Image (tube, rainbow, N blue to C red; front, side, top):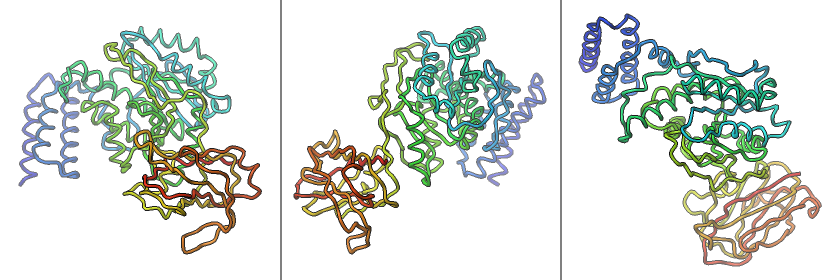
Length: 478
């Protein structure tokens, strides 16, 4: 009976729409598809009746342009398939092979300032010749102003012709006819209408960009059009991806700002594109990206420091307002991400809540936190395979808890792993040195240790009353 009344309600709406003689048959079918889509969502996902009625009312009251509407939503029932958009290639040569990483940029005409050329320049200048072989850059000129697009294409082709010829740079445009309605949208969060229109179109801009890039590479990183890159950012990204092999992730973040530096598996791009289209008018893009990550069961943010990308624009693309956002974790010069080879971690310290030992060995912005350690307490890393170490760096404490450091401790390396009552450890250890002000750092370790290293141990040499945070353990191998 419940479903019957709901179906009756939908068909009553459709009967009213049939009375609008000026609507074409295609318009009616387009609205029918959407109504059935909402009905299907209700049945599958148990949406409440009132929410379903609200969606139906909003659909029926929008003045829809049928052709644009069908273009955008015709494939929503197949979230793994491509969106049917015929792109215009403004500057491109055929992609001869799949690359490792695609860098996606979407750009529109700004009232003040233009940073797109500087962003493209930074991407290429901060990459080595070998890295350039593994990247492709796709620029979506998403403004509907054809004169502006022509000027930008001319500037891009003049400055980056050799990258276009080499297949490293493509400039595309998704025609306006494929966009959904951008006027009269819901004013969520009490945003003014022009703000809602701007952010809603931006969601669609990115959706079409993601859709285009789905098969160009193994991985995809999203940037804005006013970004500066860190030196050799691709090598850093590859190192992080390798370190996470065998673990599940949806989004890796290489900047804490907006949707700059968000990395995805390319096989997730079609779903993400559909997701942005489905909820294009609901909220800003960066909020939708967070929801997407959560829906795909990645609960926590996985963000790496230092950041690889920095926001450099002074004026926002929305109304040319000032935008002074900066990522204070950004480092422009190449930073050397540690190798941190696969290992198991053990400690006999009293661990606080879920700040377990493994978090000190990760590149993610997390740490180990234990209650006050005593003399003889240890924190042990046992490597899966013997390694040759070139450099070690251990940092304790944080900016917020500067006294939760290792006040008295030493760092040892060992060989010949054996199981014991205290867990797996090495038979013998060689002391490399002591912690100073809570930190330990040593280079040329391979010249000081005459054996391949099976274990590394942090040894507490004196009881302390303060708690202990081990913020990061970094190991570089030869």
